[in-house]
Length: 73
Image: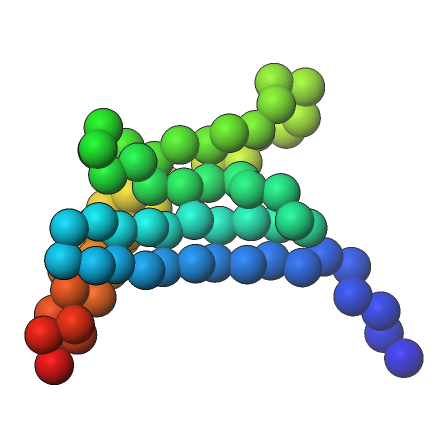
């Protein structure tokens, strides 16, 4: 049987006044949306090959709009 090499996780959540979107790989946070400063943050140490997510912040903003619309339903 094949074993699992990596585990990834994505979390999206919202409320009327706040939101959260983040990605993790193998239990380590590798990207999150900073909605206060309007940017994506990649909290990776400088000694690794840096992973980037082009367009991820814009996607996170769009998902927050959808999430808040769903709250009204």
